[in-house]
Image 1 (cartoon, rainbow, N blue to C red):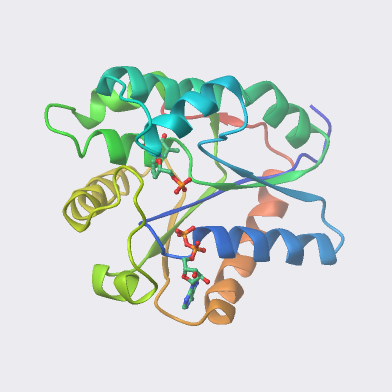
Image 2: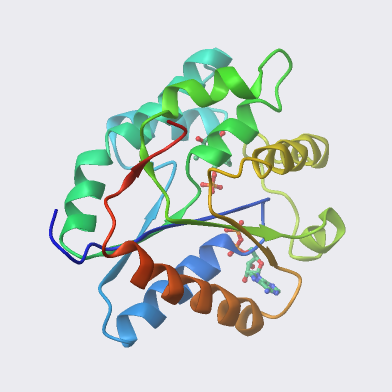
Length: 212
Ligand code: ADP
Ligand code: 2DT
């Protein structure tokens, strides 16, 4: 490992909490202050596995629930060599959804335990910081209608929120809850401060292994 690695920073939250907006704003802010940073998002719909997932999310194909869960996980694993390489080069990765979305969404389906859902992602690069953008469903609804993709219904999203709450009880993960009901600038200010702190902490530590 080089002595100053980049940090692995994840943004999670319900639909329309502002994850994509904040990931982009954070990467720009880090770059402007001279810190190399790049955005990543999961699912990464550009790979072969990502295309299968995309077609499933757009309801153009059906996949068995366990199968699609494993595909989402495989879509993260296929990016691990690149992620490690970038972190070692000193590039901070700001990631829009990660394994936590994977677990929260599948375990919101009947018959799936958190435990089972976590297994395929055990050992992934462990985020140095996971910021959960918290927004209640009525505020989220004010930010636009649901689209037509799979999972975009208020009932399902409510269960997903409950699963995220359960995941946030895990003290092995550096969770920070962010009040996402404020303006884009106010939310960004908090996210930037937390990220700058973690950058200096992470640079001298090896990347951890998730849920191990
Ligand atoms: P997500 O990636 O969590 O689904 P987005 O960043 O795509 O959320 O934001 C969803 C919508 O809400 C977009 O139209 C975006 O411009 C808007 N938005 C994002 N953050 C805020 C905010 N703090 N206040 C009001 N609207 C916001
Ligand atoms: P976007 O709208 O952010 O592209 O998300 N999802 C995501 C899962 O079910 N499992 C996963 O592992 C991940 C990363 C959340 C697309 C949808 O895919 C869901 C919403």
